[in-house]
Length: 323
Image (cartoon, rainbow, N blue to C red):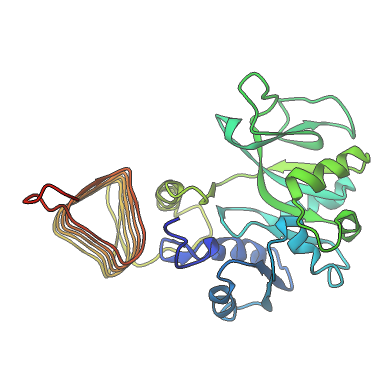
């Protein structure tokens, strides 16, 4: 919020594309034959968008929140062979085909994509071993999962590898998920699998990974996509890349100051945008610093460390000294 007031999180735009399209691209590149999107909140937007994809796909709408595993389990009658689950709120360069190969060669029931971070205290970390149910080796980048820990303190962190939200799963795993109950992959199902001694494997991915559940990650993700545009398989919108890594859409208008910012289609900057994302058809007449500005909004003042939703007009009335 407030960017998700008018759209579900997977439809938040990243370089003009809904974030879910980046996960879809990785799955299409791996040759997956069908994609099913499970959703609840404002799912009707996803229905019309998914219909435009160039791969057999559809949306399965929850009637009530079922959790990550519970939502997938609604499709258990259709999941009769190895399948892939990906988070619709991540921008990532997953090599799904490579993960599938590792999954099959390891004989695991579940294989998880991992990402390496400097500070693991805000994430769920994963401990790896070179053998099933072995000792944790913090030097490994792939191996059998032996332990999980959610949001460890610095003293509790036995790894800096985190769950990146993409899983390859064998269908019998879903038999462990209670029918009709809200149930979570990382907090409930995976620890249960581990306690049963079923093999779980994991592999660290290369490229980029961002969870845009935090609004300010939208800025980091888009700056990274611009920086690595020549080595990543994602399409770039038409526009100009400035020497500092800023991006200005070909349909945007800039007469003011731009620094490390993303200016998307139809927007204008007459004032200044610094470390900011200005979404489609918005106008910056004042100053946007370290902020995210939603679509069709107008900034006539100075904002700092703000997230502005769609269709807002931010102005300071200096005469009456009120915002």
